[in-house]
Length: 326
Ligand code: CP
Image (cartoon, rainbow, N blue to C red):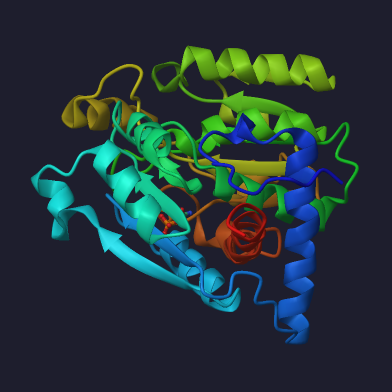
């Protein structure tokens, strides 16, 4: 087991090596067991995490806050719009100052072309770990929770298992592209053959695609891109279908919505799920646009593991915090 993660940031999925992710998973499974047994595990007593949000959250906020309390510490909820950050505190000032108050700085900033840069600038000025609660490029903690969930459902040996990462239609808002990007980076390292499916306007960042292909080559797994949702679902073991905005095509929300509206048939429904293997699991990070992105019949079915994914956010985040913030 590789240890020595103290002081490390987690901003991009590949910041941790495969062996380091395996350490995180080992600790996460142990913490899940301890919580189930009611065993106290105050590894971060008297430590405080700053949670800085530039965008709304349900699961991320709840799980980081509960996780810090369960580890014996505290999490401070800070919003950009109700602080002087909205009046000009710079990234460097924030990294310097919060690095002196807190033992870790977690940030959610999904604004396109801004979020990832912001996190890296804060990290450059901070003496404590910076943790990515989702930026415009990556959502690493979601993907660690997803990986933990897949292992729970499909076992540790994921070789020759097919995972579909598919775009799906949504009407609520143009969702970030960070989840599919993080999925295609992390999953090939754990043996899954990834099929990425999206309409032509919903491409991911070329540099992320290259990195994903490189990971697939390095770990001897498949990585394929198709523009047909039904073909992608065929014989899948894991179906992960969610919406994201056509950000590489346009950053104009109205134009983006117009493009998105062309693909209303990209919904995960019972007919499409029937194309996957009989024991396939359905995954979504939530929130989902019910009966638009996915039918109630699929998301509430026995194949759906969305609540396990949401729960596992707690355990993987506690593992990373305990390993990096001590
Ligand atoms: N999956 C996820 O990140 O959920 P929230 O946006 O509610 O935090």
